[in-house]
Image 1 (spheres, one colour):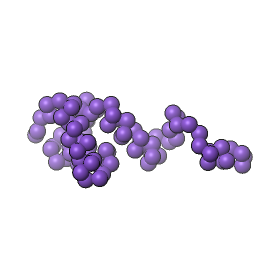
Image 2: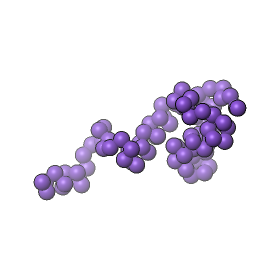
Image 3: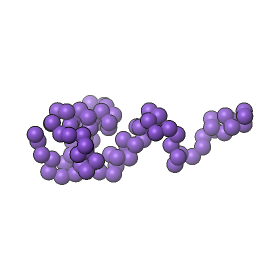
Image 4: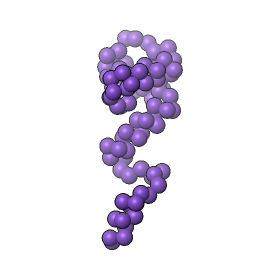
Length: 84
């Protein structure tokens, strides 16, 4: 098992994978952990806030959390409300 020295090192590795392989942050974290035999339950302590935000955005885009609360209404949302 490879030991990650710091949040900075782990986060940099994830950012590099996302950029090099053109994959999502969620995929990069899963792939990196699988490749390096890192338990996924340790990931929250290893990633920085920027990557957490990217993962959260990806999860909302995939409807894993439902509608994003902090998102401002769009024109499409307003049109749907007028139809009711």
